[in-house]
Length: 352
Image 1 (tube, rainbow, N blue to C red):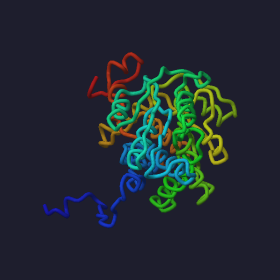
Image 2: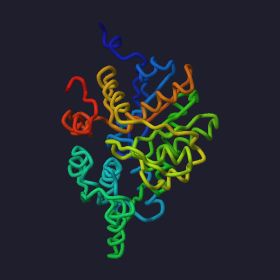
Image 3: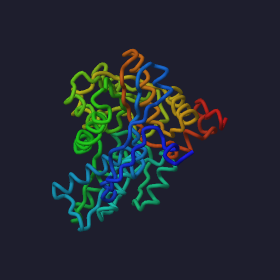
Image 4: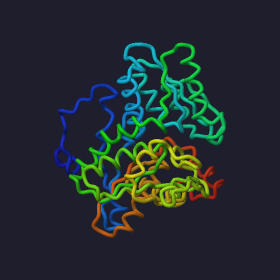
């Protein structure tokens, strides 16, 4: 068999694509057809492969957008000392730290110590000043978001050039997705998209993509995917934040407060679906075992929600969702039979 015959179907080399550093490599991730989900529903279910970002997750976009916005505002100046401070479940901290490294800034990242060991180790590896805190409710001064804001305020009082990234309330987060992720999806589907579903951590991805797609076609259905233990499903459905149950997923769902990015984009969201952990894990394991696609917990929620939306809409529709990051960042949890058994959850069949 000749070399050209070995190339994947539809492969076209793109010799003109040379990225200008880290920032230039963010974005333009492919859409992947999820074969089994598509065949099971009679729809085209497509996942945007954000695990292929240079920093490994969709949060590279938020990190780049927030820092570029700070530079445009003069809060950070390329080539001069600056500090980026943020409270995060991990992935935004990774994205911010890598962008900060590339542009000559320091980063201080505050994370609950309960997050996956893999993300914490990665943050240390890439040079973040990692500050671990106990998990506490948002109203508590010791909550990771409140702690990060306090650190930024203290550094500013010392005369340091510093920004508090504030991913939940910083509208540059959603704006970057509106400028990049949404238009990419529209172009990649040639405008043939009927629905978009995505979980909400900060609301940046969901809101930004929703606005971009609705600007092209107001009939595109936008659905929030919510894990158990989050009150965003209730907020979309009833206007009241009411959380029930719990979830092992990290970085998505809000139990008590609506993030500023999501609140600002409420008009672009049509509906919400709720997904429990066993359903999400089923998709995570199925995709890995049968399609060779490794995804994390939030992506499992997204795929399960896309399937639910496809079944609501019926065959013949195209639904796009976000594959936020890869499963390797959750090996100690999602692929740890002992951890899963303690939570009463199914284990990967090949590890059980």
